[in-house]
Image 1 (tube, rainbow, N blue to C red):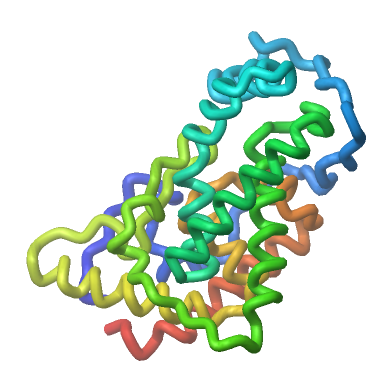
Image 2 (image 1 turned 180 degrees about the horizontal axis):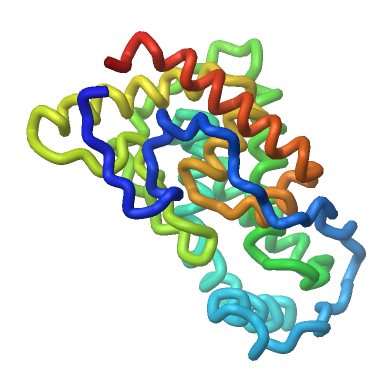
Length: 249
């Protein structure tokens, strides 16, 4: 392709070139445990043993469960751009994405009492978000719905992912005016073709190649087995590569 893509590390590579066999994820096939009403937080891990972000989330969750509204607002502020970005990539319509993101946090607020604290808070949040998104896609299927927003023009779609990994612009690090033009063209092409993929394949590419989540976290979010995740992501990348062939030189 004409654009020169930076390669600071493997997770900053261009999505269009993420077609090699995926790296080995850490074995973690088990899904999040089922929710139970008023479940106590699992204190098996001390806050000192957690990452800074996970310890912060755990403390905020404790406060929010105790009725501290400001603590929940802090959780929303921490993750709202990432959840909106996920919705926008999956749905492609800004108004729908905004409505979905709001719906996700309403659901989280109502379900917070059942959050057991096993695993990372944001993987639990992402599981709610992905299920909400899948349900909306089913609802919109067959209706006169159109994807109306060029995603690259929406900063929230590229909000920093923090501990979950870097959010990668689909056109990646492109240098020079001509390359920037090419990068914008490729960005639009990738988003358009990404929208044509099966929703399960699209989700895996967005989680891994756009939002930079680890395989370990994607396993917990999706509930997939390790082998299934690897094979589906590989097929998704191959499908996207095939669709992008007319745009690449």
